Image 1 (cartoon, rainbow, N blue to C red):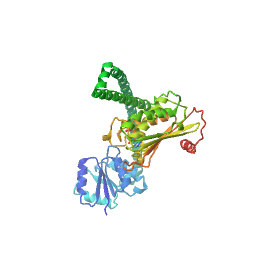
Image 2: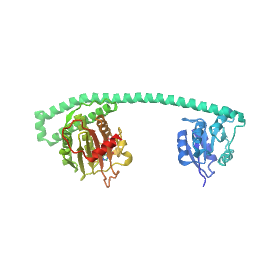
Image 3: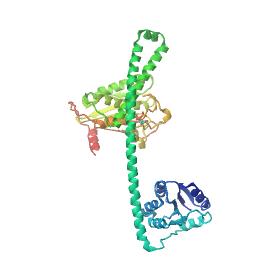
Image 4: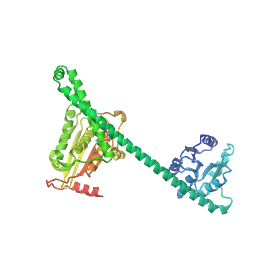
Length: 431
Ligand code: ADP
């Protein structure tokens, strides 16, 4: 069976002419417009012939040939390039670069099938004057190095520009969130005053509609505050400006408070049970309590969001006098192996964007995709590690996920037995 002919061609006229000439050749045609796409295709599909334009946006035809011919698998791959017959010097450079021969420009439709047949049957062209070979090789190498240097300089300049834009974006996000926080604090205050205003309180006691409106208002304000806090935390993490205010804290109490904040919703809206034994947690660890609370709260909120009604969440801990390891394990939809790292990146949401919601508890209601990167930022700022284990993603069978955090304890007088799993984790983290 005839193979494939790869056309690395940017010019639509040339592409049209080549496709026309090859339509009855029996070969499949693959057309790409960028050299790197072409190189990737050759490595994967091993075509029978490559036809390339000399000047392409990302590389030139000679560079394509040198790259491919440096791989022994493609030593015999015929590569033809479109070139004007007058470009004598360039033709020499092409031949020493690994180009097999030429198709003259302007293209002559009636000659094309024959020319292509020549290359498919292994035909090559040679430098007629052999004494010029060494000089042509030299020039080709010099040219390659010069272009490579130019490319590196361009990339460095682009990189500097991107870093500058990234910094501007981070500053913009941080300033915007700060600016929004001030009026929101005022709105929160006014709404509390309004709620406590005796005539309005009387009215809401008599009229459930008014009570509903006031509740809705205060819930939305709380939600907005937590979004702004999330954005501020992530921007502090992004700009590495996270400053921990470290003090001894009771991890069990932090966990209990985080769970309590979801109790109402769990009772009224979602049938998910949480199992947790405060005694498993260290009572004194040095950490930034507010940030750790935010982190565990995110993990619990995710476990609730991605676990269907009827499911359960198990929160467990083990510790010794150096490390605490705790995990939030759910019986939810699970996480595909290829997503286990990327979900910790900013703005990565694993599910359907159509399910996006600002709720922290709706089933499969994805948020901003910031929660887990905040968790990772907070855990790493404390010198710890966070990762997820899950048999896979399946909303039907719900294999579940387990988010595991290991953090140094630093302060803890209680001398508990060092469990084997923590010892293993220590050596894993060290490795
Ligand atoms: P989001 O705000 O979208 O929940 P996160 O950063 O908290 O953002 O989570 C990123 C993605 O990781 C989620 O969109 C979801 O696909 C996946 N994910 C997080 N926690 C769980 C979990 N407990 N079970 C299954 N998938 C999860």
